[in-house]
View 1 (cartoon, rainbow, N blue to C red):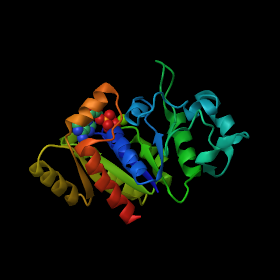
View 2 (view 1 turned 180 degrees about the vertical axis):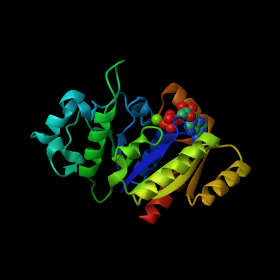
View 3 (view 1 turned 135 degrees about the vertical axis):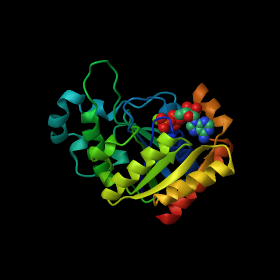
View 4 (view 1 turned 180 degrees about the horizontal axis):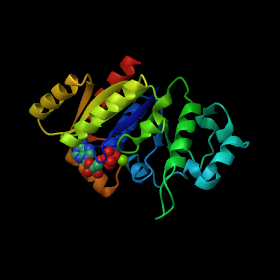
Length: 252
Ligand SMILES: Nc1ncnc2c1ncn2[C@@H]1O[C@H](COP(=O)(O)OP(=O)(O)O)[C@@H](O)[C@H]1O
Ligand SMILES: [Mg+2]
């Protein structure tokens, strides 16, 4: 199963990705996390890695040569890609947890992120998972990835929705775009402080035909872990993510 985690910037996509990945690990699943956010680079820390992987973009020689390299003989030119085929500096491992990064915008004036979108789309299309493997894709913020076709080969779109008007609006837009691609969409409420807020948000989402598959509390441990660059593998939010994963796996 390939799950993409989408939503407004700051809603908690990377946090949820990390919580789900660590939960999947505790169920002895192989988890491939794909860092598809070209702007933020802290995901490796949330997943408990010391340093980030070398972006896949480097494997193809950078953005300029992408077109040429995608068709020349290298691992990304294969029609099917298994995790074992990806060189170890690009796919780092910790127990059953694997992390890949598509690419990051590193310099001012280096041009747009479109080549990363192309690489991401092709990579996800070619990616083949084993029997006990899942892939969780930490998407860039907002909705542009739909325009770039990155979500074409995704099995399930997971929306992260925090209690804000903006976040609900982005969720609605994503639902619309994902439905256009015939993708199943469900939402996870994040940073929730009260039953009342959860109830109101769930009602608003249901009215847009979006099913809620879990609620993650506003957890000071998450805030602290993000602040200090620690792994997200304990506490209330972590427990709640376990229920989200159970729901997703049950639907498989
Ligand atoms: N469940 C939560 N409880 C407390 N703080 C949270 C929670 N989820 C996210 N945060 C806070 O929100 C910030 C942004 O989350 P992040 O996952 O990086 O957002 P995104 O990847 O969507 O941009 C984190 O640094 C953390 O401080
Ligand atoms: Mg993020």
